[in-house]
Image (cartoon, rainbow, N blue to C red):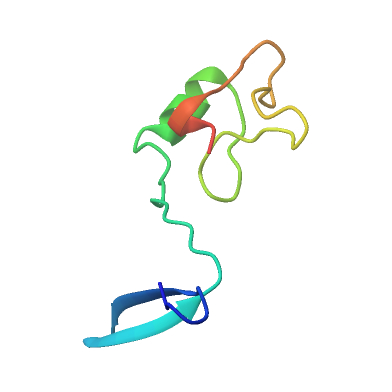
Length: 78
């Protein structure tokens, strides 16, 4: 943290060089990939996948798949 501004100072590697930047907010999160067997699981259960390879769900109903009665959670959800 910068003692004067209170901004967060982050150092990271970019193109083999150490870069230092200041930010107001930093969120540390891991990227997630769909399971390797997602395509086969979707085929067997009869549900659609979204453009990223996860189970396709509705924005306001994130566990309901494209097939009635089939619900998702966890890594297959997104």
